Length: 252
Image (tube, rainbow, N blue to C red; front, side, top):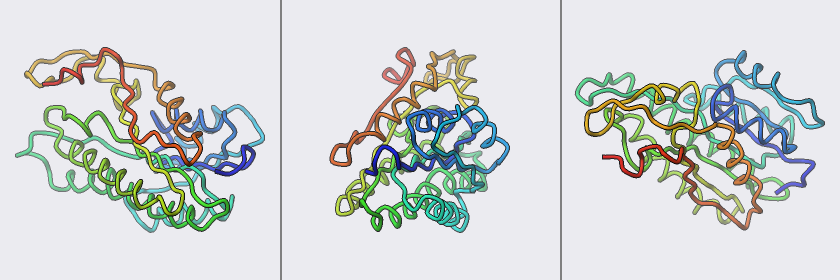
């Protein structure tokens, strides 16, 4: 990894929720951070929350489902900083419904963002990390508790998150020769705009509706920083971080 004074991280989906939390923690620790997302105003809102330091925070509009947009994100990052140490593959959406009623357009949208987008970003990160000096870097994929066990009526989201686990394993294996480490963080019930509804009540496997315990998203950001700061000869391959009392362990 680069010296403490010259570390660069890209966070996709950086404008809200987990992406925002990770961006804040990485920046506080001294990383130059590239915030990527579809809405420039959300990215700039996050930058406005950062304490002024010597490191940089830059917003770049990117649609991860578009390989050309992803290519431009990484080209701009390379142009600005000439290296990349950490990629947090975070961008994702959650669409679901009963299997027989899921709209094909919605299905493809979830696959394009949650899976294809993560692959496009991983591919571009490899191109930079394998050719820089010092060689290597770290890719952290945002999985989910749904990478292990589904919620009711969540086939598109759950399918893509299971696929992310396969991508994580393949990336970890293929990255060895280039000193590229790949990890996956599986998050359960962090209090974000996307997940806030769970505190009010969501469907359970037995058909009931129950409120679920939540946790502070800041703790997820701190966990991502912990993974990011490991030396490249050490890897947290999979981490599950969750609200202690969420029903995941007893799901079903």
